Length: 144
Length: 144
DNA sequence: TTCCGAGTTAATAATCGTTCCAAGTTAGAA
DNA sequence: TTCTAACTTGGAACGATTATTAACTCGGAA
Image (cartoon, rainbow over all chains, first blue to last red; front, side, top):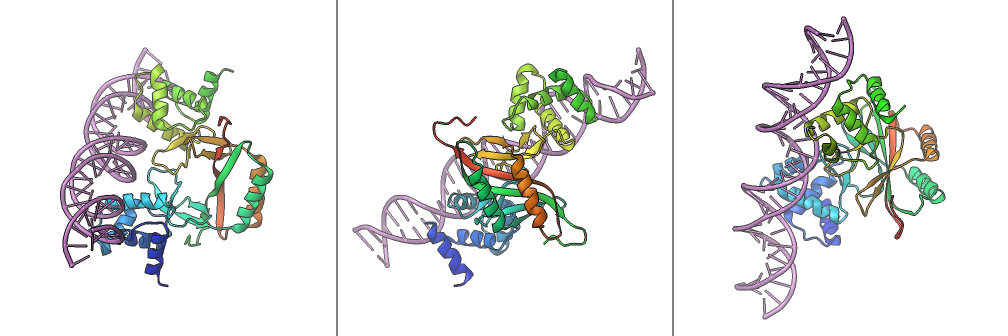
Protein backbone atom coordinates (compact mmCIF):
# COMPACT_ATOMS: atom_id res chain seq x y z
CA UNK A 1 0.00 0.00 0.00
CA UNK A 2 1.41 3.33 -0.99
CA UNK A 3 1.67 6.35 1.21
CA UNK A 4 -1.39 8.13 -0.17
CA UNK A 5 -3.57 5.12 0.47
CA UNK A 6 -2.24 4.85 4.00
CA UNK A 7 -3.03 8.46 4.58
CA UNK A 8 -6.58 7.96 3.36
CA UNK A 9 -6.90 5.02 5.66
CA UNK A 10 -5.62 7.02 8.59
CA UNK A 11 -8.28 9.63 7.98
CA UNK A 12 -10.99 7.03 7.55
CA UNK A 13 -9.98 5.30 10.77
CA UNK A 14 -10.28 8.60 12.56
CA UNK A 15 -13.73 9.05 11.07
CA UNK A 16 -12.67 12.08 9.07
CA UNK A 17 -13.68 12.95 5.55
CA UNK A 18 -10.77 12.65 3.13
CA UNK A 19 -10.65 16.13 1.71
CA UNK A 20 -7.77 17.26 -0.45
CA UNK A 21 -6.64 19.70 2.23
CA UNK A 22 -6.53 17.04 4.90
CA UNK A 23 -4.64 14.72 2.61
CA UNK A 24 -1.92 17.22 1.81
CA UNK A 25 -1.58 18.39 5.39
CA UNK A 26 -1.34 14.87 6.72
CA UNK A 27 1.08 13.98 3.97
CA UNK A 28 3.22 16.97 4.84
CA UNK A 29 3.17 15.96 8.46
CA UNK A 30 4.13 12.37 7.90
CA UNK A 31 7.03 13.44 5.72
CA UNK A 32 8.23 15.92 8.25
CA UNK A 33 9.94 15.01 11.46
CA UNK A 34 11.18 18.45 12.32
CA UNK A 35 8.25 19.30 14.56
CA UNK A 36 6.93 22.01 12.31
CA UNK A 37 4.85 24.99 13.24
CA UNK A 38 1.47 25.61 11.63
CA UNK A 39 3.08 28.34 9.60
CA UNK A 40 5.86 26.13 8.25
CA UNK A 41 3.40 23.43 7.26
CA UNK A 42 1.42 26.10 5.47
CA UNK A 43 4.46 27.29 3.55
CA UNK A 44 5.43 23.76 2.63
CA UNK A 45 1.97 22.93 1.29
CA UNK A 46 1.45 26.22 -0.46
CA UNK A 47 3.98 25.28 -3.14
CA UNK A 48 1.98 22.34 -4.40
CA UNK A 49 -1.44 23.56 -3.38
CA UNK A 50 -1.40 27.34 -3.60
CA UNK A 51 -5.06 27.91 -2.83
CA UNK A 52 -4.84 26.53 0.69
CA UNK A 53 -5.58 28.90 3.52
CA UNK A 54 -3.61 29.31 6.70
CA UNK A 55 -6.87 29.02 8.63
CA UNK A 56 -7.42 25.64 7.12
CA UNK A 57 -4.03 24.53 8.30
CA UNK A 58 -4.80 25.68 11.84
CA UNK A 59 -8.29 24.20 11.80
CA UNK A 60 -7.11 20.94 10.37
CA UNK A 61 -4.24 20.58 12.80
CA UNK A 62 -6.70 21.15 15.62
CA UNK A 63 -9.05 18.52 14.20
CA UNK A 64 -6.13 16.12 13.85
CA UNK A 65 -5.10 16.83 17.39
CA UNK A 66 -8.57 16.09 18.68
CA UNK A 67 -8.47 12.80 16.84
CA UNK A 68 -5.03 11.86 18.04
CA UNK A 69 -3.29 12.22 14.68
CA UNK A 70 -0.83 14.82 15.92
CA UNK A 71 0.31 16.19 19.23
CA UNK A 72 1.47 19.49 20.52
CA UNK A 73 5.10 19.61 21.42
CA UNK A 74 5.94 21.49 24.55
CA UNK A 75 8.57 23.93 23.50
CA UNK A 76 8.42 26.62 26.14
CA UNK A 77 8.37 29.26 23.47
CA UNK A 78 5.56 31.30 22.06
CA UNK A 79 4.90 29.25 18.97
CA UNK A 80 3.23 25.88 19.12
CA UNK A 81 4.85 23.01 17.30
CA UNK A 82 3.22 19.83 16.12
CA UNK A 83 4.42 16.29 16.27
CA UNK A 84 3.07 13.83 13.74
CA UNK A 85 4.38 10.95 15.76
CA UNK A 86 1.86 9.86 18.30
CA UNK A 87 3.76 6.80 19.45
CA UNK A 88 5.30 7.03 22.84
CA UNK A 89 8.52 8.92 22.58
CA UNK A 90 10.61 11.61 24.19
CA UNK A 91 12.26 14.75 22.96
CA UNK A 92 15.75 16.08 22.59
CA UNK A 93 15.87 19.86 22.68
CA UNK A 94 18.98 21.02 20.88
CA UNK A 95 20.18 24.08 22.68
CA UNK A 96 22.28 25.41 19.85
CA UNK A 97 19.79 25.27 17.07
CA UNK A 98 16.33 25.45 18.59
CA UNK A 99 15.54 22.12 16.98
CA UNK A 100 13.67 19.27 18.52
CA UNK A 101 14.27 15.63 17.81
CA UNK A 102 12.29 12.58 18.72
CA UNK A 103 13.93 10.16 21.04
CA UNK A 104 12.79 6.59 21.35
CA UNK A 105 13.90 4.25 24.03
CA UNK A 106 11.76 1.36 25.09
CA UNK A 107 14.04 0.52 27.90
CA UNK A 108 13.61 3.99 29.32
CA UNK A 109 9.85 3.60 29.07
CA UNK A 110 9.94 0.33 30.89
CA UNK A 111 12.19 1.80 33.55
CA UNK A 112 9.84 4.73 34.12
CA UNK A 113 6.75 2.55 34.20
CA UNK A 114 8.39 0.28 36.70
CA UNK A 115 9.50 3.21 38.78
CA UNK A 116 6.08 4.79 38.96
CA UNK A 117 4.25 1.58 39.64
CA UNK A 118 6.51 1.11 42.63
CA UNK A 119 6.51 4.77 43.62
CA UNK A 120 2.99 5.94 43.08
CA UNK A 121 2.20 9.60 43.30
CA UNK A 122 -0.49 9.67 45.98
CA UNK A 123 -4.00 9.75 44.51
CA UNK A 124 -2.65 10.57 41.11
CA UNK A 125 -3.43 8.57 38.02
CA UNK A 126 -0.78 8.90 35.33
CA UNK A 127 -1.98 8.91 31.74
CA UNK A 128 1.14 9.89 29.94
CA UNK A 129 4.73 10.67 30.56
CA UNK A 130 7.49 12.27 28.56
CA UNK A 131 11.10 13.07 29.17
CA UNK A 132 12.47 16.31 27.84
CA UNK A 133 16.20 16.14 27.38
CA UNK A 134 18.06 19.36 26.80
CA UNK A 135 21.59 19.47 25.53
CA UNK A 136 23.78 19.63 22.49
CA UNK A 137 25.56 17.42 20.05
CA UNK A 138 29.31 17.39 20.41
CA UNK A 139 31.28 19.61 18.08
CA UNK A 140 31.88 18.37 14.57
CA UNK A 141 28.97 16.03 14.82
CA UNK A 142 25.99 16.71 12.70
CA UNK A 143 22.81 17.00 14.68
CA UNK A 144 20.70 15.20 12.15
CA UNK B 1 16.46 37.45 57.88
CA UNK B 2 13.06 38.34 56.58
CA UNK B 3 11.69 37.65 53.17
CA UNK B 4 12.24 41.16 51.79
CA UNK B 5 15.88 41.12 52.79
CA UNK B 6 16.32 37.72 51.20
CA UNK B 7 14.80 38.98 48.01
CA UNK B 8 17.17 41.94 47.97
CA UNK B 9 20.01 39.58 48.49
CA UNK B 10 18.88 37.36 45.64
CA UNK B 11 18.87 40.36 43.33
CA UNK B 12 22.24 41.54 44.54
CA UNK B 13 23.72 38.09 44.05
CA UNK B 14 22.47 38.11 40.51
CA UNK B 15 24.06 41.51 39.98
CA UNK B 16 20.72 43.21 39.44
CA UNK B 17 19.62 46.61 40.67
CA UNK B 18 17.04 46.32 43.40
CA UNK B 19 14.25 48.36 41.92
CA UNK B 20 10.81 48.41 43.47
CA UNK B 21 9.40 46.64 40.46
CA UNK B 22 11.88 43.82 40.65
CA UNK B 23 11.29 43.45 44.35
CA UNK B 24 7.53 43.10 44.01
CA UNK B 25 7.78 40.79 41.01
CA UNK B 26 10.27 38.53 42.71
CA UNK B 27 8.19 38.60 45.87
CA UNK B 28 5.09 37.66 43.90
CA UNK B 29 7.00 34.81 42.30
CA UNK B 30 8.37 33.40 45.47
CA UNK B 31 4.90 33.41 47.02
CA UNK B 32 3.40 31.74 44.03
CA UNK B 33 3.86 28.12 43.11
CA UNK B 34 1.09 27.93 40.57
CA UNK B 35 3.36 28.51 37.57
CA UNK B 36 1.85 31.85 36.74
CA UNK B 37 1.76 33.58 33.40
CA UNK B 38 3.22 37.06 32.96
CA UNK B 39 -0.30 38.37 32.83
CA UNK B 40 -1.34 36.79 36.12
CA UNK B 41 1.74 38.11 37.86
CA UNK B 42 0.88 41.52 36.50
CA UNK B 43 -2.67 41.34 37.84
CA UNK B 44 -1.46 40.15 41.22
CA UNK B 45 1.05 42.97 41.56
CA UNK B 46 -1.20 45.64 40.17
CA UNK B 47 -3.30 45.59 43.33
CA UNK B 48 -0.47 46.73 45.55
CA UNK B 49 1.50 48.58 42.96
CA UNK B 50 -0.94 50.02 40.45
CA UNK B 51 1.54 51.98 38.38
CA UNK B 52 3.46 48.95 37.21
CA UNK B 53 3.51 48.26 33.51
CA UNK B 54 2.89 44.95 31.84
CA UNK B 55 6.01 45.55 29.77
CA UNK B 56 8.00 45.77 32.95
CA UNK B 57 6.68 42.42 34.04
CA UNK B 58 7.68 40.85 30.76
CA UNK B 59 11.06 42.58 30.71
CA UNK B 60 11.78 41.68 34.28
CA UNK B 61 10.79 38.06 33.90
CA UNK B 62 13.11 37.84 30.93
CA UNK B 63 15.94 39.39 32.92
CA UNK B 64 15.26 36.99 35.77
CA UNK B 65 15.30 34.11 33.36
CA UNK B 66 18.64 35.18 31.96
CA UNK B 67 19.99 35.25 35.49
CA UNK B 68 18.52 31.90 36.44
CA UNK B 69 15.96 33.25 38.88
CA UNK B 70 13.01 31.75 37.04
CA UNK B 71 12.48 29.23 34.29
CA UNK B 72 10.04 28.80 31.51
CA UNK B 73 7.69 25.91 31.91
CA UNK B 74 7.00 24.03 28.73
CA UNK B 75 3.26 23.81 28.63
CA UNK B 76 2.53 23.09 25.01
CA UNK B 77 0.01 25.86 24.92
CA UNK B 78 0.26 29.32 23.53
CA UNK B 79 1.00 31.13 26.74
CA UNK B 80 4.35 30.94 28.44
CA UNK B 81 4.38 30.10 32.12
CA UNK B 82 7.11 30.80 34.62
CA UNK B 83 8.47 28.69 37.37
CA UNK B 84 10.12 30.40 40.31
CA UNK B 85 11.66 27.15 41.41
CA UNK B 86 14.95 26.63 39.72
CA UNK B 87 15.90 23.49 41.62
CA UNK B 88 15.78 20.27 39.70
CA UNK B 89 12.23 19.09 39.58
CA UNK B 90 9.55 17.67 37.35
CA UNK B 91 6.01 18.63 36.53
CA UNK B 92 2.57 17.17 36.95
CA UNK B 93 0.15 18.43 34.35
CA UNK B 94 -3.37 18.12 35.72
CA UNK B 95 -5.58 17.27 32.80
CA UNK B 96 -8.79 18.38 34.44
CA UNK B 97 -7.78 21.80 35.56
CA UNK B 98 -4.95 23.00 33.37
CA UNK B 99 -2.84 23.36 36.48
CA UNK B 100 0.78 22.45 36.80
CA UNK B 101 2.40 21.19 39.96
CA UNK B 102 6.02 20.69 40.83
CA UNK B 103 7.11 17.17 41.45
CA UNK B 104 10.26 16.34 43.32
CA UNK B 105 11.78 12.93 43.48
CA UNK B 106 15.47 12.49 44.08
CA UNK B 107 15.26 8.81 43.51
CA UNK B 108 13.82 9.42 40.06
CA UNK B 109 16.65 11.82 39.31
CA UNK B 110 19.23 9.29 40.37
CA UNK B 111 17.54 6.62 38.29
CA UNK B 112 17.53 8.81 35.19
CA UNK B 113 21.13 9.88 35.65
CA UNK B 114 22.18 6.29 36.06
CA UNK B 115 20.18 5.25 33.03
CA UNK B 116 21.67 7.89 30.78
CA UNK B 117 25.21 7.39 31.94
CA UNK B 118 24.84 3.73 30.96
CA UNK B 119 22.84 4.44 27.83
CA UNK B 120 24.44 7.46 26.31
CA UNK B 121 22.77 9.17 23.41
CA UNK B 122 25.47 9.08 20.72
CA UNK B 123 27.44 12.32 20.55
CA UNK B 124 24.89 14.11 22.66
CA UNK B 125 25.76 15.96 25.82
CA UNK B 126 22.82 16.22 28.21
CA UNK B 127 22.56 19.44 30.18
CA UNK B 128 19.16 19.08 31.72
CA UNK B 129 16.30 16.68 31.90
CA UNK B 130 12.73 16.88 33.00
CA UNK B 131 9.84 14.50 33.20
CA UNK B 132 6.40 15.74 32.31
CA UNK B 133 3.72 13.63 33.90
CA UNK B 134 0.19 14.03 32.65
CA UNK B 135 -2.79 12.71 34.52
CA UNK B 136 -5.40 13.46 37.10
CA UNK B 137 -6.02 13.18 40.78
CA UNK B 138 -8.53 10.54 41.73
CA UNK B 139 -12.06 11.70 42.41
CA UNK B 140 -12.79 13.15 45.80
CA UNK B 141 -9.17 13.98 46.32
CA UNK B 142 -8.14 17.55 46.31
CA UNK B 143 -5.49 18.35 43.79
CA UNK B 144 -3.61 20.69 46.01
C1' DT C 1 -29.11 11.77 -11.51
C1' DT C 2 -30.46 15.48 -8.77
C1' DC C 3 -30.88 17.69 -4.65
C1' DC C 4 -30.17 18.55 0.24
C1' DG C 5 -27.74 19.33 4.28
C1' DA C 6 -23.98 18.68 7.13
C1' DG C 7 -19.42 19.31 7.06
C1' DT C 8 -15.57 21.79 5.25
C1' DT C 9 -12.88 25.63 3.43
C1' DA C 10 -11.19 30.37 2.37
C1' DA C 11 -10.78 34.96 3.38
C1' DT C 12 -10.60 38.26 6.54
C1' DA C 13 -11.31 40.35 10.93
C1' DA C 14 -10.50 40.09 15.70
C1' DT C 15 -7.98 38.78 19.55
C1' DC C 16 -4.28 37.35 22.32
C1' DG C 17 0.29 37.21 24.15
C1' DT C 18 4.57 39.22 23.64
C1' DT C 19 8.13 42.46 22.08
C1' DC C 20 9.77 46.89 20.68
C1' DC C 21 10.66 51.65 21.21
C1' DA C 22 11.31 56.44 22.60
C1' DA C 23 11.05 59.22 26.45
C1' DG C 24 11.21 59.80 31.23
C1' DT C 25 13.01 58.11 35.84
C1' DT C 26 16.06 56.01 39.24
C1' DA C 27 19.61 53.22 41.85
C1' DG C 28 23.78 53.26 43.29
C1' DA C 29 28.84 54.14 42.23
C1' DA C 30 32.00 57.67 42.93
C1' DT D 1 25.29 65.04 45.96
C1' DT D 2 26.00 64.26 41.30
C1' DC D 3 26.04 61.64 37.28
C1' DT D 4 25.14 57.99 34.24
C1' DA D 5 24.04 53.57 32.86
C1' DA D 6 20.39 50.92 33.85
C1' DC D 7 15.68 50.70 34.30
C1' DT D 8 10.63 51.64 33.67
C1' DT D 9 6.64 53.22 31.26
C1' DG D 10 2.85 53.35 27.92
C1' DG D 11 1.68 52.65 23.69
C1' DA D 12 2.36 50.99 19.25
C1' DA D 13 3.66 47.09 16.61
C1' DC D 14 4.07 42.41 15.88
C1' DG D 15 3.36 37.52 15.18
C1' DA D 16 0.56 33.62 16.26
C1' DT D 17 -3.83 31.93 16.83
C1' DT D 18 -8.90 31.97 16.90
C1' DA D 19 -13.42 33.48 15.38
C1' DT D 20 -16.64 34.64 11.91
C1' DT D 21 -19.06 33.78 8.02
C1' DA D 22 -20.23 33.10 3.29
C1' DA D 23 -19.29 29.98 -0.29
C1' DC D 24 -18.32 25.46 -1.55
C1' DT D 25 -18.25 20.28 -1.66
C1' DC D 26 -19.17 15.68 -0.72
C1' DG D 27 -22.03 11.71 0.26
C1' DG D 28 -26.37 9.93 0.73
C1' DA D 29 -31.61 10.06 0.19
C1' DA D 30 -35.02 10.32 -3.10
